[in-house]
Image (cartoon, rainbow, N blue to C red; front, side):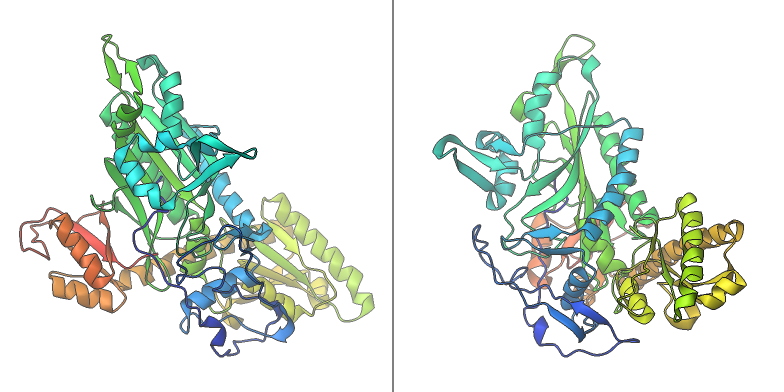
Length: 543
């Protein structure tokens, strides 16, 4: 799969810890943690497999806030991951432990996509993590593309292995080995499978969720009798990813075709969804590859067609990964912390009961339980924070930092009036707070569902507006360089050579992200050569 392989790498600031803190709207009295660049750093040049880096000290119960996004985007990103309890360090540099809250977001992604995969005729299965090195060597461009990232096993059971094994970087090779044994006739086609698995790629520069030595993903593999069927499948899957990004993650990706330079090693065509992050860098959020017959010819994966002739199958592969979690953080988060789209939020509503006097407690908690049960019965994901160790203001800040879309407050006056107070995470302060919403299930459930839908739509529209305001249409190479220098995306006609595409990368740091499916009408001239161009392309710096 090519979902995580990008030639352009991001930088992480190792000086983040030295940046002064500034207080936000309210103080956060939280056990604050920072992910150190010792563990995830673009400055790394080597990733030892046995070194356990020193852990940063956890500073307990001191006034801390998240680094402002505008001040240091990378420090802000790491602060959110640590303090929203999404992930932590693994003992090997460049690896991470996904914590329950972060994994719950990944589970929400899995839940949606799993249903869609099965609706379109795909079945889940699992392939071994260890792949004979000879398999990787069979497809020339594949081994060339992946060799620098391979993790190899040379000793097993205390003995040197006769053939070294590759720890799965992707599964096209082992899938083809098995497809060759399963596919014999046109009656065996199409064969469409998916696996949820871990992948290992020996990255030199890492960033949690975005690029780590090991990550989680789904990878789909299909075999077809005709090239038309394979192309239809590749396009169907990138369309599925596009809809997921818009409808579930509230990320307005741009879908398109990769250039030859950026095409996945071993593919005939690569389709991609490109997302603009809050720092205006591009994130390749998912890919779908038309593999043609490249792997089937290398592995001899053939079938007997209806005329009795032997043919090589036509194939696709496609993937999204835990990189999407990083994309959600960097698209929607703010200086307060994480901001989750309700459709993927592990907790959609946090209920905070409030009381001062002991005789108020039972009435408030009874009302809280009633509200919780009403919402849960309607399929809304609810949590009650009735802990007595922290004050309500601390709880408000904590759950805002964790990105919960809605907060419900219930106090003694609310119990008396049979109403609640509801606050939206995406609209800070009094503007996002509504008083006097009836506790009655017939009223409250509809109101909460409506507000969750509003938050989902609002996050998408805000991200779309940000994206569109940071894409510049260019007609010359000078205009492209100016747009990239300003940190924006450049969109312009392109028909230049691979060599000239590489020149753009070397001189600007930007890569050709894709030729969007949505293309403007009319005649066009290449921004680089002045020759006729059929398509516009998007260039941007990327993760």
